[in-house]
Image 1 (tube, rainbow, N blue to C red):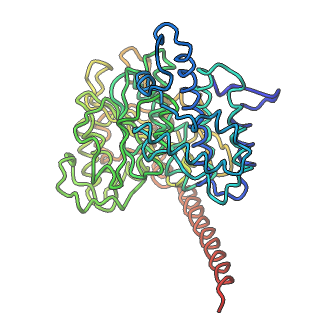
Image 2: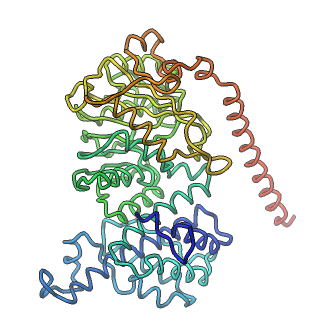
Image 3: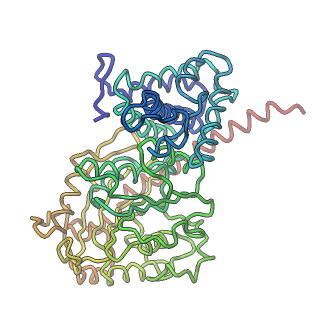
Length: 514
């Protein structure tokens, strides 16, 4: 695996060494802007390597390549390789990395690649000639990225570049904090969703796909389990164009077809980019408790089969949007704010009751706090199944599995927690043993419980796992310390933002000549 690569005799993986080196070259550039510079260069190196590999085979002209023209775009398109014009090739840019006009050269390279490859139109960053990125730092980055493969075979180089791209996405998300959470779902959460759903084949859909992590992990899951990656196809939508660009690059560098990953600024509710899609799997991390989803414009929408979601909160609109796009045997796994498990305001309790009574809810997982970068709001995972007696798994239509994983995970810094590989396997293993015909599932007090629909009905359709696994109600429904610390953290964050704003205003006032 690429993640285990070491170099220079150190014990650090290569991606960490690269991150530290790249971070030194950042200087005064904000992380939100710098990520497009770094990730754009990694992507350029990837497509240039792939192009050069095929270009050399065409020059040699052996076997299937006999008589081929190395500069014919059709030769590259036939093998799903992006065509890279001469002055956009990495070798050309590297040769001029120390020149003062290197920033302009890289921008021109990105432009030329987009013109030659329509699928990359409006995707690549052109931010390299800006004044805050000096030519020396840019040249240093080009040299740094040039050495990623350290002379290894190109096939391995491509895998390594993909891994470095993914690692850097996560590091930039951590560096940006709250804003980083808008384009990046923590890797351990994505791994848990995918490991539990097991998307071996079929259509995988994420209607709020961010930078594409759900798709990358789904493909990785198939390949890790000796399946054929081509057995799954991906469909996505993203409303933030900058994030969509990251997704397109993230998928291309992994060799994943992103032609069905669409962007429009209205978003999935107002402008569904895949109206007719019926997917085998939906995997998603929608915005928590989104009040700005234009619900008042969609009161009569056909997607609200289980009840009209409140205009002030999109949680139950997302649930029904996911269900609308599932085929009759489809399954969904997604993240939602924990409040959606108990809320009864504006008809949400009635919708939840309908979901339970129609036997759509398969499993609920209570997650630990501090997993997400952009919010301190507690969250849970929902797993829905269109047909809980379909023969693929055992008939469990009158049961729901509850897992309370709040005490799992470990802190990677003061504010952020992640789930370990052992945590992920333990939670996924419980779910698989429960739903598989030959599973050896048993309830574990305080951790997991298979409850009847009748029991859920007795508890008024509240779906918080603590109610079922054997924890006291007050611990699950209202933990004073947890709520106080959450509010305190949010208040402190607001104070910091206010301090920054006041300092900025003072600084600007000094510049005003009265």
